[in-house]
Length: 248
Image 1 (cartoon, rainbow, N blue to C red):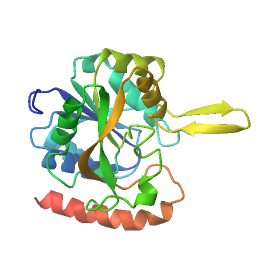
Image 2 (image 1 turned 30 degrees about the vertical axis):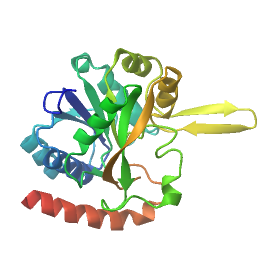
Image 3 (image 1 turned 180 degrees about the vertical axis):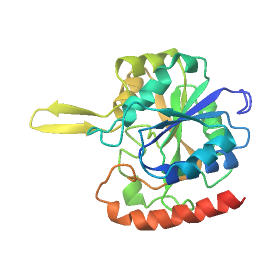
Image 4 (image 1 turned 90 degrees about the vertical axis):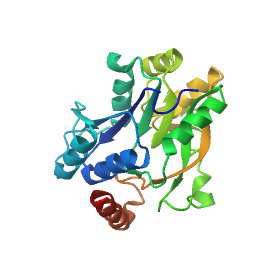
């Protein structure tokens, strides 16, 4: 097994008017995972204050690119931007692709190494993800974790380390990573970002695995949902972590 320092890992995150969150992601990724490879931040023409995020990107060598979308795009562009990263010819030689959400914070050391080690223990897996926490200390409540969209039915792109195989790249090229709607008899079923690709990978005998690692995931800060009332609480926690990381 190649060590994390030897393996070529390329990470990608999308900033959608979430620059303070993306700053936290950048700082915590590199602080908690020393020797990490490279990170690309695709920005959806964000109009919030990006200055501190840009400072963090410069400090840790993260690349900022415009995605080609903006914050008024009516459809969630997340999966399409992730696909763009995978299919960029410059990334074809990566050993692994690490997908990240802007509202993730690494609160424990060595998370990426743990994901890689879990992948290498199980050759039939195509990707590995951590367990998720709202506070960065304890896993989310069992009733929330039981949601099949979190762990069971898809590799959640909040934090997903994926083998950059020819098969995976072909699935991304042919199927993509965007959400999809199945029109069934009498009902419609929405497949969230990365779920359809996870389903297709399973048809090739390639499953995903959840490693013994924990991250903070704030959930739903880019696009509003029923939990939007919790954003002030989430932002207060974010700002406390930022203060700690900025001061070292």
